[in-house]
Image 1 (cartoon, one colour):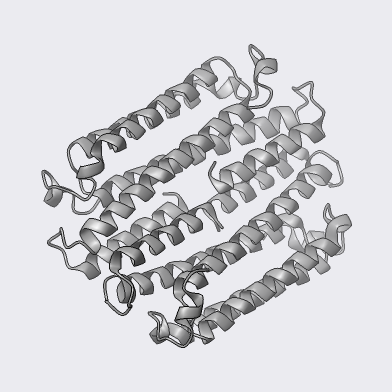
Image 2 (image 1 turned 30 degrees about the vertical axis):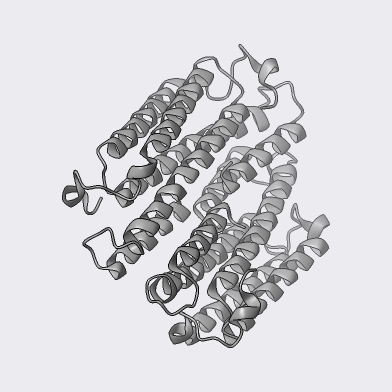
Length: 102
Length: 102
Length: 102
Length: 102
């Protein structure tokens, strides 16, 4: 979790899209609660897994949106004190983690 | 979402592991809320993405656990009224969705 | 690479589908050679990456086909000396590796 | 396959790393031929799938290397006639395809 302390309170690439981003995360939170209810109600496990796949697709979209904002504003937009090369390395490491899924 | 109506109230493969499963899902719900707080606090987007990767890894583990229970109890355990061939097809379709992520 | 020595020369789940399977692998080999030519010809890297994604999708299909044959013939079909529980564990470990991509 | 005609004969981000890149692709081609031999020899399908996972991990590494070169030389390095915003969009579309695997 690099750069965390340094970045508190700073304006970031996703500031403009903060509201829709929070809405999407709130929907994902609701989907996770929905999966909990499915398990409590003993629903068919294949249906539970299908719902988990849908949550993962939604999280992938959020992550891709954040990557895009980061690339636009920080890597090429110059809205960061870090050198572009360093920002690019961080971006690629994040892509690698997403591809390996954590 | 096949078999949903038919399976309400039935005992499923994951019944024995329901408590730890619900605990894991509750932790994942907390992680999603944590990401919302990170966005509200304008945290560095690479850190937000790293946290999303961690949620994806946790969801993968839950999905694999459910697949394993399903294979053990339904596909090979005979705790289902459906023929094994059909259960196997459902299992493989779920695996394909997980690999493509939804 | 478990079970390798033990399985040499045995008839496996995919024996019936061996010909189309070898054809698909041969096409994938051709796609990999195509990517080498693209690099030799200094083709645009985004196009090279798109081609790599296509190879990954083709390999996913081959892997899913093999998993399906294994599940049908070995796990539920009884065409194996190993107990179903053990075969199921192997299957799930293979699924986990495919999801993490190796 | 965008930009293909336009980019024939141009020097690209990966020109400096062309030799090791071709070596890696040649090793991957050998791995695909190895999988064909495993199928011809009726090897245990779980072992074949494990080998496919290894090929996918190797292809992911090649793709990530190409993305990194592209980001370094084209997106932030200015070695392209296209505007950075457009290059960034192409990069993100390639990342999305890699995450969905084709």
